[in-house]
Length: 162
Image (cartoon, rainbow, N blue to C red; front, side, top):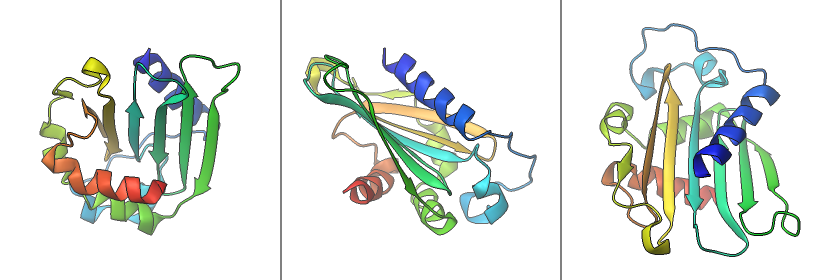
């Protein structure tokens, strides 16, 4: 179910923004990325949280790019009474670059796809997906048990969401 919602959200984002493929580049680190590449719509960071056994908006996911931040809140229990909410706010290259600089992308790519037991015993799950320089990787982890490589990025994202 989580995968289906993530896929639907991603497809919606791709179809709405007329996404184009990242052009080949020789750049290898976040600090070397130029503004043109950051404005490419295939460059993004997704942060999400989900709780399987809850009432209300139990699945929240935000997609950060150099153009905008799209936050989607979804209810698993009663979508008629609690329809999906989507909030779009403007962003810019500097803000997005600041997020990218908070994580070493090469170290991020080395992290396993699943760390711990996300949402076991209704503890909640968090995930971060980064699409950068033509590479994409997702890491799922237990809510509140942030991998050390992602602590700064998650903290900034949570601060931005407030």
